[in-house]
Length: 161
Image (cartoon, rainbow, N blue to C red; front, side, top):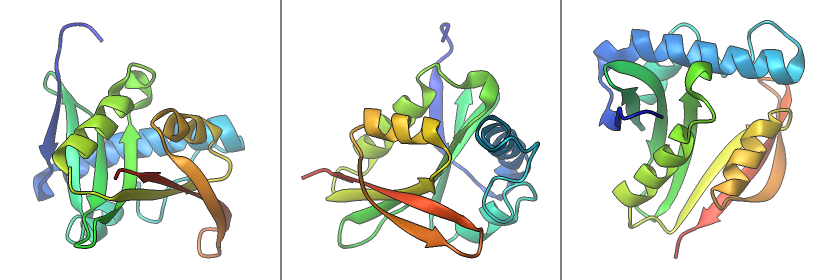
């Protein structure tokens, strides 16, 4: 990754346009690779900023930077009972396979040490995500049909304590 440090910082409203650009590239890249479609594979509003505007309030959104460039982001939901949710994580396709996602997972786990469990969902067709989460210690615990977005979601969990 060169000598530029990866930095994780809580995102603010002004970060939404740049985070949305990166999110759009990441989700569209997945859609091209795994579904053969040019775009449109992200959650509703992923490419307009609406997704981030909706979830930044109830969740905590972070931007990931390398040098002065935003290269990704993620949203976590921290619950009082310690059963936390990794809502979404994305890395610009130009910066994938450099360990940034893995660093993000380590940052999340270190930043929220009281978590008893982390849960997440990812599309059944996104096999790269499955490999990534399993490499980070997550176990597939089930599947659920997402009627609104018309796909089956694989559910993953990582028990921390």
